[in-house]
Length: 447
Image (cartoon, rainbow, N blue to C red; front, side, top):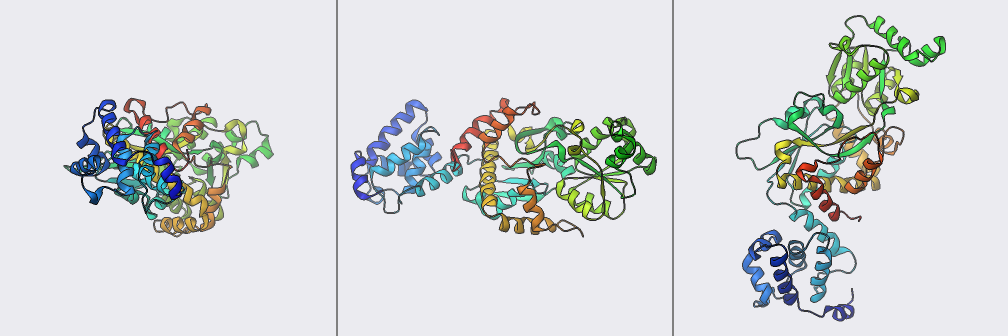
């Protein structure tokens, strides 16, 4: 914006615009000026001086103050227009042409979105599709908006106890994590847990049951006996070889659910499997199976690739048999109902999502560097089976088992509306989470 064009559009004084907006806000929002000042992060006395321009020291307020006032005064969908009007009313030396002020404006909006939550404890079950949160923390996206987030590694099967553990007395923070939507229903603590919003979608054809090389696979059984009863026959033969003490090492409760579904389709009653599953986290499960313990292994795509590289074979892969594909899986943000019941809590979770979506853009544009950082972090918790940068890059680029991450809440919601295999709300409507999701959408770079 040139100086000439600024004078052409200026028209009003900053104080006149501010005075009009304050009067309008009192009528429209029924908020006193001191509350508006608090939301803008400035002192009420400063607001009064700005309104009347009585003090030359602040008669020409900074871009930062003007943007904060626009955020506090306007409805979310109109605040950017008000900010531009404030800025044009009196040029600022530090105001740059183009989108610079808009980028700063969006960060301020995200920062001022909520101010009551002191900190967030994020218990992160670490695997490839939660790893962008590592990038968000490393790149300071949470710090940029004043959100104090502490990332703690939490094993997948310990996620729900972590969420409901009593917080310290007087704590003003939240505790959140990532978990599988369907798996919550299988947990004893399910009534205490709120699934807030999905982050990733997994195709069901990614499910696989891995066994020792001596076992006959479904494909091999089909070649010898025909395809019609290949799954039933191969599973029965595997169970005979494993014996009554059969143990299946499972990387997470969602994988256990898939394994149970596979056995049921093979004609095995769930009651027969009551003592067969050993549920561990993704690192411990892979290490346990590759050390020689257990008769079979069920894990995510990265773990499956590693296990096969070490000699394990696929007894069954759902994607190889169209008639046996399972429902899609959805992983997303979870917290306790207590935390989600707080309006400031819902806003803080939306701020987390703001950092998440920034991180997705960064990974897409800097895949090599992001992969190196993520793999180094994951290998801290891995045992002798280490991950490589290429493992993450292949995962990120894969379209066979994993749908690309939606880049905004709106995009995720649009996908879920189209999916007949998602019979749930993408948010908890009774707690008005959709309301804050719509607002955080406005803070993101893309409309």
